[in-house]
Length: 93
Image (cartoon, rainbow, N blue to C red; front, side, top):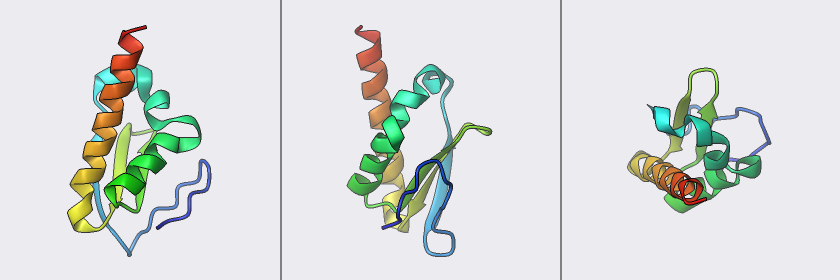
């Protein structure tokens, strides 16, 4: 498991597979909550999915998922699930 350092990009290059996806436009107003305070939602998604690392690039609006090949889709799925929950909670307020 990769060690997280707040706000420092340290992917496990050379030791993990990689995939990425563009943040959907409807997430833009909610991205801070999707990531969570100090990245807590991304850290939880990383652990629950068995991935090594998940990161959001602000400049390109891309989310990277790093880890074992068979776990990458699960990592992306966890992030999408968190986003749905955040947006549903925000809409109900």
